Image (cartoon, rainbow, N blue to C red; front, side):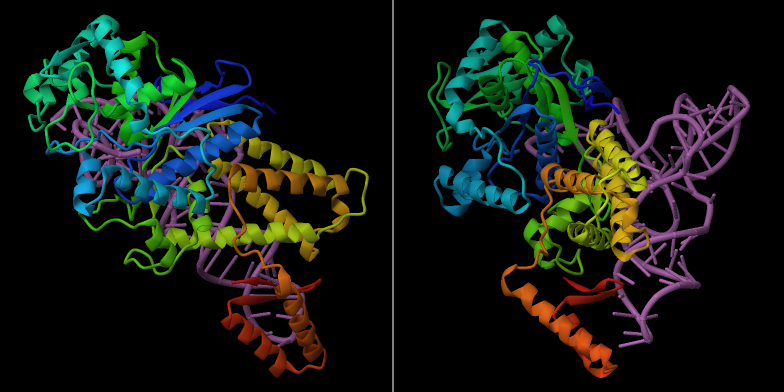
Amino acid sequence: MNNELYIYNSLTRQKEKFEPIHAGFVGMYVCGPTVYNDVHLGNCRTFMSFDMIYRYLSHLGFKVRYVRNITDVGHLLDDGEDRMSKGARLDNLEPMEVAQKYTNGFHRMMQIFNTLPPSIEPRATGHILEQIEMVQSILDRGLAYIRNGSVYFDTLKYAQTTGEYGKLSGRVIDELLAESRDNLKNQDEKNHPSDFAIWMKATNEHLMKWNSPWSVGFPGWHLECSAMSTKYLGQQFDIHGGGNDLKFPHHENEIAQNMGACNCQPAHYWMHTNMLLLNGKKMSKSDGNTISPEELFTGKSIHVSKGYSPMVVRFFMLQSHYRSPNDLTDEALQAAEKGYKRLFEAIKNLDSLTSALTTPAPLDAKCEEIISLAFDDMNDDFNTPKALARIFELVTIINSLRDGQIPMSDISVHGLEKIKQALGTIIFDIFGLMNESASNAGPVDGLMNLIIDLRHQARTNKDWATSDKIRDSLNELHILIKDGKEGTSWSFN
RNA sequence: GGUCGGGUGGCCGAGCGGCUAGGCAGAGGUCUGCAAAACCUCGUACAGCGGUUCAAAUCCGCUUCCGACCUCCA
């Protein structure tokens, strides 16, 4: 009914009609991973969510420039050590070797989950110059100060002059003052506890460091996103995304830096994905409440009774809204697996359906309405669980047509074509799901047809022993035999 | 302690003033040599207590429980 896309904007805390800065084009920046460790499943959820968003925007006809960075420098630990440096020291590697190793692993996992690569994937270390320039701009505009070779962003002055600080995260600068802790290195160099480093002077042991007008050092950890989004998407762009744990301080500081450098809000729409939970709790390595993608696939974890394929995991995540917390449990995964299989069986069944009707039939309008409602759901802040619910209404119709509960005369050639096209678009193009149980084409189909034919003969002869032996033996090989009105079919179980 | 966001049927998970999704599990039925698959029917849920309203799971208040952020975090 409408083709307008509405997006929930974290900045204004409401759904807003999406209007791109340049008609037909979308610039989207998503905070990528820090590559000092194997990808976390939670990261995967966020990137699958934005992958779906990227795919849907593209489907709507937008030409999307999707920028997702790789952070390979700059994040400090509590003890002041750089994450990359620490990883390098532990593994006895060059920092860039650490970054490359985990970047490769990250890419592999993104591929396994069938996410599309971003248009540009810039690395923080490849943009040191841009970051130095941005520090200079902020200094030039009087919103930063230099202390012992480090440069700090002056949040107090920024808050006073613009009133913007804390807008995204709902924080008030006075409260930030009250709640600050003194466990950060160089805390005493700062004027105000909420001030943050945009350039850090490096110690001698520090491995990753560069020359700058202020010191040999490295950029502050919020700066890369400001610098790279500006470089590739301009000072103002459409969408900025990330996990909602990045809202503060990362995104808040990012806005401050952009405002500080050019006095403009970088992104029109801020989108935040919610957390992935494991058995109702945040994943945490120290508590043992965690599961890696590999453990999830292989089932080698105390949290799952068996392994679940990447597409089942993707389907599972699509069943909840990106802004809601998603609770991963073994029971929920089992339910998702069955739902996923039923969906793909229906898609397969759909291919075997043919209609002779060339004039509109009773079911045509009904199916078109369901499809149209599914797209409405997508337009309503990417409501994939709701759209998926509509799809399952279609699944029931498809199966009913195949088994004869609904006569084929109720649907036309056109109606059938419409369903095929819509399911293809939504399931494959937008949701990014793939059929994992697709038969390996080749000889398998032929073999199965032969076996089914032999079993059919046995059944005709009322040789139940033979027909049941075939069925049971195949079942042990995880092949399911399904006797229907229109003959026997099979699927991997 | 501060700031947000939540508590929906056995489980997961949408909905967010009237039309009470969907998946999985369960019960009954159709079909079947039997079973499975598929289809049909069913269960009537919204943390608790007040309030607003003709009407509240949906709005307001209080209570309670949970989560996120405030420190690296998707």
